[in-house]
Image 1 (cartoon, protein in one colour):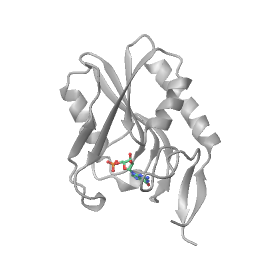
Image 2 (cartoon, helix red, strand yellow; image 1 turned 90 degrees about the horizontal axis):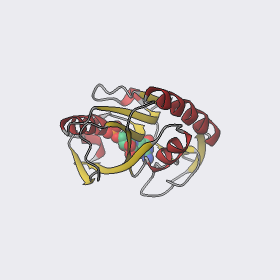
Image 3 (cartoon, rainbow, N blue to C red; image 1 turned 90 degrees about the vertical axis):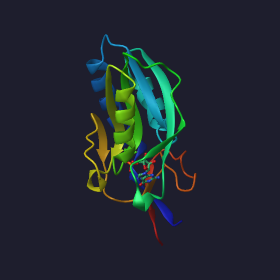
Length: 173
Ligand code: 5GP
C-alpha cells in the first residue's frame, strides 16, 4: 500500500451529508422511515446521516457480499446478515457508502421490493457512475468520484482504513 492522499475531506463529507439529510427529512416528513445501513462500509455514513435528520426513523442493518471475485461480478449477492424488522408496508431507505457497478443495490432493491415494503430508495455518500454495469440511479446521490480505488469513511482495503475520517486515494510512491 502506498501513501494515502485525501480525495474528499471530512468537511466536504459533512456538508454533503447535511444537504442529503435535509432533503430526506423533507421528503419523508410525516412518514414512517426505516434506514437500512449496508454493512460494513455504510456504518459511518449511516451514523452521520441519522444524526442530521430532523424526523423520527427506525434503524436496521444488512450485510452482504458478492459471489465470485470483484472483476467477474455475477450480480448475485449473498446475504450475510439480514434485517431484523418486518418491513411490510414500511418506507425503506438503503444507506450505502459507495455505488460502483450498482449490482449490490440493484439486487437489494429487488429483494426489498419483493418483501412488500411501501417504497425502497437508495442514498449513497459516494458514487462512481462511470463503473455502472446496471442502471442504478441513487435517489439521494452524494459526491461523484472518478474511477479510482478509495479508502476511509467506512471503506476498507483488506479490512483496514475504515476508521479514517476522510475519503483517501492510495498513491504509489
Ligand atoms: P457495487 O456497486 O459494485 O455492487 O458495490 C459497491 C461496493 O463495492 C461498495 O459498497 C464497496 O464496499 C465496494 N467498493 C467499490 N468501489 C470501492 C473502492 O474504491 N474502495 C473500496 N474500499 N470499496 C469499494
